Length: 259
Image (tube, rainbow, N blue to C red; front, top):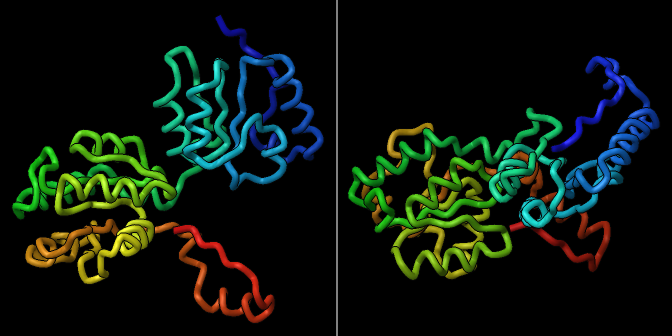
């Protein structure tokens, strides 16, 4: 049975007002007492003050895999909600996944709510483009989505992908159906499909706030890829002129872009 660890009690206001060295001391004391019973996972996006305490760092997929491999009773996931959900799905029954801030969300994951996705699917079924089992359209969701969306895709013979294996997921899907519904990141879906030789004219964006996604049944019948209208709020802020300015300032630099 796990032993509860008691840190000196303090209000949230006092905790937030503490200097870094006091916070470091509290964290170090709890870690020393729990030992191997706790594993701290730090996502790449976290600040240095958090990363310094992480046992492992990585992207959401790597950290979820590490969560499944660790034997620690407590898994503290310093990331956002969908990451902790994924780790919880893969963890053992005797393990407890802890998200330090339950309000830590991903705006892109939140753009695909399960009710909206189910409504989308019902409209696609009503239009005769697929059936409830997914015989006409294969749903693919990016790792950066809620557990409910991942389960939705699984129930309809779909799959979960990462940014690095999205191309393989598309090829797998097109081997069994003529169409793909990709969510929640329209840009990852568009770039992946385009890299596979699918023209932009064969893609349609589904807007969950519009009737029939803002499309006509004929347009959806002609589309090979239906892209959910979602995006990363941070990625949206990068513009071509930003790249042009950096190239002008640093001639010969290499530019790396997330798909």
